[in-house]
Image (cartoon, rainbow, N blue to C red; front, side):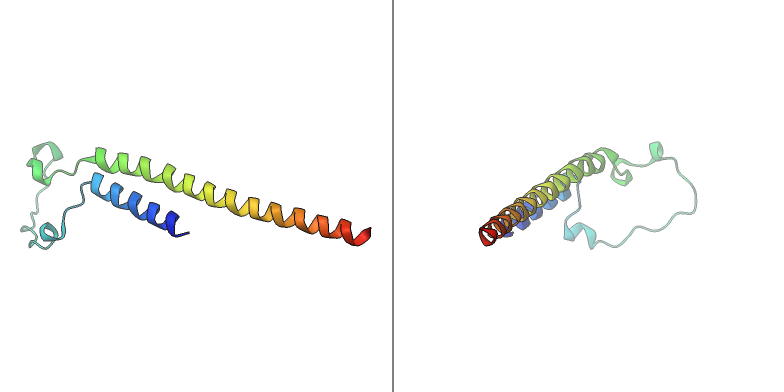
Length: 97
């Protein structure tokens, strides 16, 4: 299980880095003064615009990776259950003979 957790942690880190999450130093800056007027997005300065592409790509990468990891763990659990059922069937056959 630790390998899977390590892999999930690495994937989450990669998604956050690719999404452009600001470092802690940038997050601790005081917020700019609030404005009262509506300004269309194309008139905002580039540093105030939030690019959607990295977030969208991050979401499209994150979901299949999580689904794949879920299917891998499900497959492992199912094979374990299958081995246990086969063992129990063999025990029943031996007890009848």
